[in-house]
Length: 101
Length: 492
Image (cartoon, chains in turn brown, red):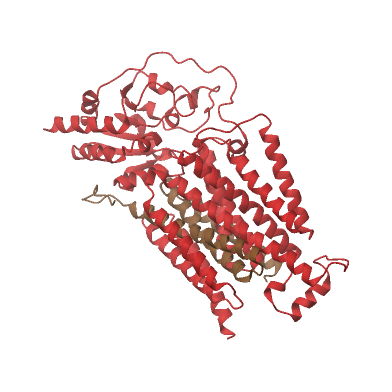
């Protein structure tokens, strides 16, 4: 397991990283970025897999299974939705207007 | 096989790096597309590595659950319309919160089971702090037998609480945005009931974290947490949903980080914490754009401002599509202000067609977007992008507001409260102080509106009665269609 203070440092540095990443984002990207960060916390899938992988009783297995199901949904859904949104952002070009559908 | 754990750890490290770099790239429109792909590779790497962790059981079940979850979400994500994006983000976010809560539940139940094995009933002092339990762990390195340390237990409980609240809250947000729950659910003493629920959940959580874990107590804990998320979200109105979704996104991130600590998984800690911090900041930005505190969104009821509202003098002055088209065809600068009503009317494609005709005539056209237009931060930008509007024609509120005095025509479609000048002039108005798009400073304003009624918040809009405002009544899509036809007629 991780040493307590080492974890505290990780928590702190990661928090600052998250803050700095978002701090100067144009409004135009708020939705994709929120959806993108929504995808990133889909890493919970990994945790759910570990939990199910260590589950012993039937009850634990059922809950772990639901956890993996939900985590997989978070990761996959978050990715598809974000990718679809970002795909649409295009700058003006001479042939602008022929947007993707 | 001693290299395997190192390889797996390296994969987690790379995943965390890719997440951060991916999010960083997502903060600029040019590199954004690549950003999500990078993050996607990170996720793939982390998930594959997890399969190869030693001492993993139930591998078949894991694969089955991953396949079902991924294909269901992939299918729904591919099909959903851009207008429905906010509720899908809410739904996926809720799933993440639920997963974090499930991890917490499995760990807590496993903890109870481990304690029962390590310290069978009858032996006093079952405190997890007892040094013997550490000795046993050291001798028998079976992961399922490792009792959680007090800090792990506390963070595990906290993560489970936040995750469960995010889960049920996001599901309610989803149902509301989907239109399944139309009514705001309000009753007297609601705040007290909610606070009581939270207090009870926290209290039981503290009991659990202190090592007094038992299955019934765990069950009650989760029921209370889920109920609190539900009750907290029910009274919140649709216009506040951007703030709520953003907040629950941050919640899920935090829950993931805490559960990551319990599992000793650095990738989860870093990814979760980055999202938690980013989400908190985004939530603050959203709330600020509405001139309200997060607490006010969550616990205040909208429209409760006291005092007499300013009387609005004058009448709404109509205009027909032909005149409106002429006005804009011979204008030098036109700013189009779309609101959520545009999305509801599915008029974004017609608007872009109209804007293109104007651009062809040499009119300088821009789109102005209020930070809270739509049902999610930046939602309008996505809808316009879907219609093909290039992002360099879309301007934020701070950039466009100084340009309104030099604008000949401001065309407002389906926006109401975000262009209401009362937000600046009437202290009694519930939206007083909210930053608005300053369209009334334009030389002429044309408002496309279905009828004469008030907006979402039920507030009169002084803009509609201003001397330089003309009202073009009709459904957004139909009205834009007429404008396109009239504009083409001028050119013909």
